Amino acid sequence: MRVSLKEGLEKKENLSMNKKYIVYSLETSKNGEEFYRVQNDANQVVPYPTSLFEIVSDKVNSDWILWNKPNNSSALLPKQFAYLSFWEDYYNDELEALKIFNLIKEQLFQEELEENEVREIFEIENEDEITFILNVLIKTKDIRFINLVIQYVKSKLEESNGEDNTTLLAFRYLSLFKQSEVEDYFLYYLTNIELGNDRLTEVVNEYFS
Image (cartoon, rainbow, N blue to C red; front, side, top):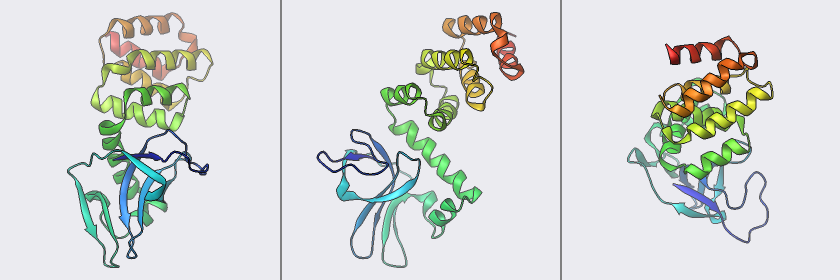
């Protein structure tokens, strides 16, 4: 499920017009108030009143359940989230809750994220989201973004910002594909190896081995 802010609303902190937000749960209080829990522009997962949004995708994964809580509230959410301390554990950075959340986030990204949105994330250089998306692309072996990732890593290396985990993930993603574009870029890298580092070179050498 995805939602976007309704037209004509006053500016909301950490929420943007014309942006689609993935819903992680639809919650109903014991008083009947309804909330979407979404990840806002500050990467905070926060419940917001449903009245702020309109639904742009009503797709709900088969793993989602309607959970009736002991306090007479309820939530439509992934079954993996359906225990009383989940959100408290998540906000307290408990490792198990973070692991569960990230697995569900990966699943929802695969199902919901559109190609143009992936391109926009790379264009605005949102490093946290790029890292997350690269992990998803590696798992799914999604070939659609080869040229986009090549442009991204080429720019980073030329700016001498190549020695980070995101660039390494990008190289690992590219190395999944025996495509001429990847081969050409990796050859370019080897002829400009001073821009890289040992970990990147190892990925490239394994690609050609």
